[in-house]
Image 1 (spheres, one colour):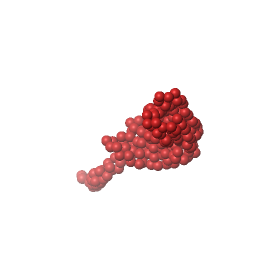
Image 2 (image 1 turned 135 degrees about the vertical axis):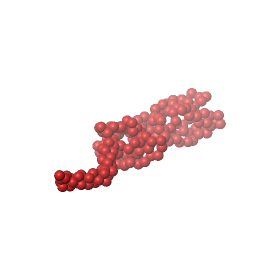
Image 3 (image 1 turned 30 degrees about the vertical axis):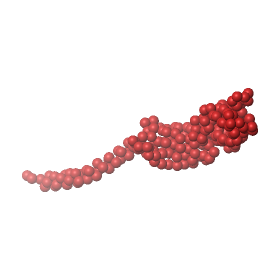
Image 4 (image 1 turned 180 degrees about the vertical axis):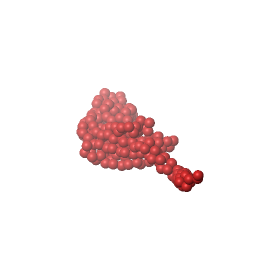
Length: 226
C-alpha cells in the first residue's frame, strides 16, 4: 500500500535540497571570507626610541609607518603617532603582502631615523620588536682667516673628530683653501661631543689641531687665523 507519509517526506526532502542548492554559493562565500580573514591576521610592530645624547627615552617625536607594495617604490602611509614620555611606539596593521615597510622618526634638532623592515622578517605569531636610537644635533662654525694673504698661500685641513656619514655632515676628506681666505663653514655634529680638525699652512711651520666641545642644540666656533 502506498504511504502518504512517505510521499510527504520525499517532498520535504526535495524542498530542503533545493533550498540548500540555492543558498550553497552564499554559504560558501561567507565561509571563504571568514577563512581569509582568519588567515590574514595582523602584524604588531612595536619598540622603544632612545635619546643617546641624554641617555633617556625620546619624548615627543613623530613616528610614521609606510608600506611599499611588491615591485614598486611607492611609499603608502599606514599610520602616524607621537611618542610619549616612555619612548614607546606600537603599530597594528593587516598582514597584506608587501615588499617592505619603512619607519621614519623625526624630532626637531634630532637626527632623523629612517629604518626598513622587510615583510619576510615579520611574524603574526608574536609582537615584532624594533628598538631604535638617535642623537641631538649640535653645530660648529669653522672660521678661517688669512691675515696676510699671498696668491700662492695654501691651507689644508682634515677632520679628526666629528659626525660622519650623514647628509648634513661636513666631508671627512682633506680640504684645501687657497690665497686670500676669509670664510666660515658650518658643520653638524652629535650633541655633547668633540669636533676637531688638523691643519697645515703649506710652506710654513704653522700646523696643529683645533677642537671644541659641541653642546647639544647650540653652535660653537672654531677660529683659525694664519
